[in-house]
Amino acid sequence: QTVALDTFSRSFLENPDQPPSAVFGAWRSAVSVPLAILTGVLGIPQFSPLSTSTELDDKVQYPLFSRLIPSDAGTARATVAYFRNRLDLSFLGVLYVNDAYGSAFHAAIQEAAADREEGDRIEEVKGYSFSYSEGVADDTSELELAIKQLK
Image (cartoon, rainbow, N blue to C red; front, side, top):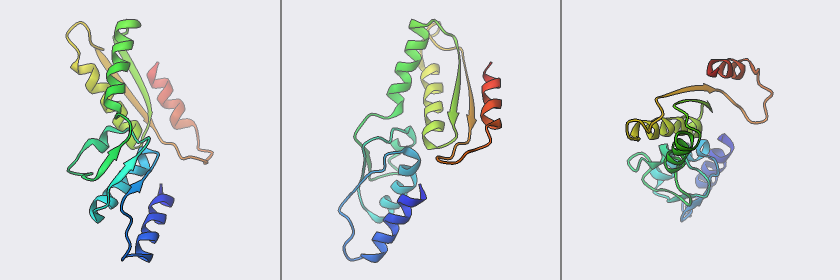
């Protein structure tokens, strides 16, 4: 995450008279969120091919951010419909990484579950988050605790 921001910032500061016309990226929502704030302040449009977090739908906070795929809101609605209508589930546990993507997807699942008609909705959605750092051999106790709470 910080590598992308550092690279963009350094490039912009080294060539302030020649700012980019647009930024293509980042791939992950956790990187796109802070980058979209920066590009928005600088007046540079940003296009992401894979960032799906619904957090990025906020046009006040991220006025120049666009994505090339749908946000997680649509995926959440389809997920809830499948769990309820195909698997006949009425209680759902969501285990998610505590970052921009995971938190927003969990919120989208909760919203989609609440939006369904009475008798056709997931009655309860419990969420359990955990931390994750790419390339770091983390202590797994936080993840194990979250999994136990789902049971």
